[in-house]
Image 1 (cartoon, rainbow, N blue to C red):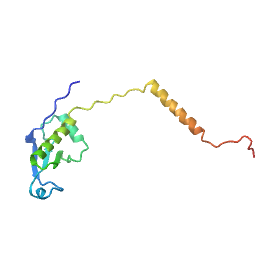
Image 2: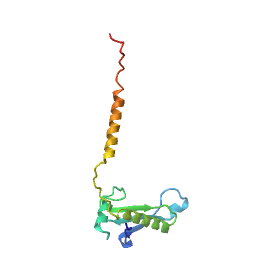
Image 3: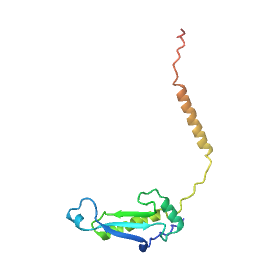
Length: 141
């Protein structure tokens, strides 16, 4: 089976803004806007329709009700590395739904699996049947 071609997102369809990173970082974090806020409008993008549908169907908190994917990258100290990180995460997410999932075909259970199931049921039944009260033959009041 051949590997599908990876989808690329056009950079013109992505809004990027630099924001201040959160968390520890000393003086640098207060001065430099090194974190990246990436917004990608899925319905307005040039992605194929089936990929858009699968992206919007994801149960992901980063996708708004309007269908805008919002990624925040603040892992690195430099803005360029955070920009690369945000784009790689966007491409990773898009390519995770690029290939349609295989449709499940219903199959019948094999003869052997049915026999094993019935055998297990009868063993459990036997175990539970032996859990009753103990009857003593000489005890007849």
